[in-house]
Image (cartoon, rainbow, N blue to C red; front, top):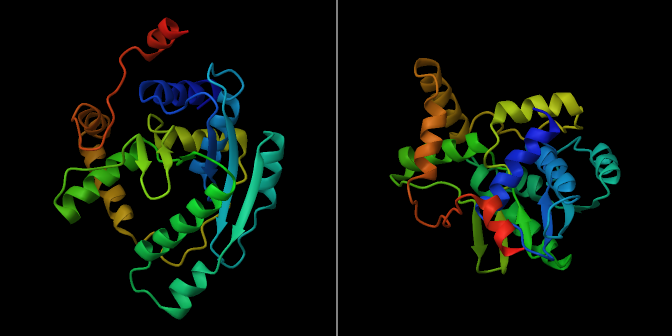
Length: 251
């Protein structure tokens, strides 16, 4: 995927669900993976020409995994002219050594989100951008259906009452395969996951299940995603039709 296509996907999401407003100060959570680095690249370049002026800051919550380095991420942020902050925590030690969690993902995610939200508020941001893409949305839909008995998945934009932050997902129209191609073409400084639970989660199960369905029924993932977009799911905002024309009328 070329940068132009990445920006096209990103602007489609931003315009369709009105994710960005004039004067927004948006925090981008950087895990070190391909998705968050691609999101950083997308928003940093969108900022150059988007009609509504906004600022972005990059933030990494260092969970304390052995060997986790952020030097190359900082270099990328410098090249994109984005301020970068690293918040060091003891989450890894608490989850895996002190509590010895058998199913660590839920607690780890809760603690990570708490640390991230706290840091964001100290930096004066009003929005937080997550790097969830199309495949994440479909996988979460299946996880909710299979393990919770609910028809639910990530919303493009969510207001967090407890913090006053608005959560946005500008990569929602990007496929994981496209992001992998962008990562390789741009040689993004991906930091490999050090988590002991990596690859053994419910999300990995859903990913493998969907890959099998896609193999047997080509186009299956795209059709499921379309059904989600058109399904009027609880908590989803109203999509704006022809958002570019709408913007032109209001300028």
